[in-house]
Length: 550
Image (tube, rainbow, N blue to C red; front, side, top):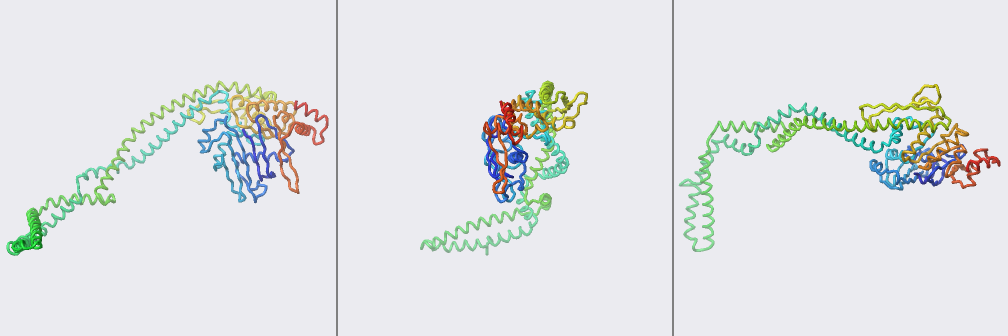
């Protein structure tokens, strides 16, 4: 329920704060006093788009703040789904800055307007005769039927099942699209994968192959160079080794005379040992270097294969080719395994569909059973409201097409007079009839469902006398289970309120401002008397007002 509304710098309002209580609150005031301004401010709190033209002083900030007590409404999930901070005492604030920019806050956290608009229907339900009423909406009509049928828990189960069905259906569609796209590439990917597999990449060391190729390709030059190197090192007469050995003999004669000479000898001896080893390996290498045209051809073929594959795939190494081979293998295997995955999802989808259809069928049966009761209650409620011949027809049609609330389609037909054919409610009901039908629906719904705060904006237009009394009685009965605000011109309805607020205008220093005042017992008596007989309150009007209040 709404507990207070603070309005600052909006339309004709300078700065007011109004407190609201449980039960039925009546709001009255002369035409043009500013009752619509109060509703306009409330609409901003509920997510209506802001307009700088509605600000009283455009050079100052406009602030509208509503406080709501929502601990009994189980709205935690709604807040969570819309990424809002939940508080049992929730504060919604709208600000219109001097430049025209609008900001919205829920519990002091900035929110987008669409978040506020999603939350609003759970807080306040505003009805006016001149607006399109939600009663003509199939979704709302189904909600009314479900409330009477007690379908809350079954609907919760169905919605969960429907969500699971949608998720699997979407996953299946995505998988089929993936298969369709993958199938187009399968042949090409398979060709590339087979080509890389046949290359047996893991057995090829490109660096070693390139070394072997260079060696075999230059065998004669290499052999000649190695032989010459060996001769220079180890030739009997002039080889480096021979010269070094002779020098070692010379140093050997004097090494015992000094530590320095002994070091010369040892260092030269180490060099000779290393040179002998090098000479031996060079000689061995020279013996093993042989031209082998056939092996050279084989190595060249392997290298050319690797070079072509690297060029084809835009890489520089065998390791990169192996990585591409593994990736292609995964793609091919994934594509070939899609049929199995699709089969599993199709089976899962069929099971989920059967489950959801079964629950939807249960909803259909319960709705079918509840419709006669709803029809009876609506017609009984409308009888004293001046529609004694009002009749309803509900056409509930099942299908296999899933909706958020089941598989049923609902059409509501109405006639207000005997002998006239039924027609769609939105086409055959007049504005006054629609207002009373809406009141009847809300009155019935209040018996079965926790409703948000309802604001009736002059829905009693065109109603008077005994019908006004009956309408007031219905509102008062509804307000025992919920908070109800009624903007009215009828004294019969005003007298039924638990609380009474008066909207009025004042001119101060040639500036007109709108004010709102909570009326005490005597003030309320005068207000209702004025509603009965005008500004010049007579004793008869006061007596009539007392009678209404009593």
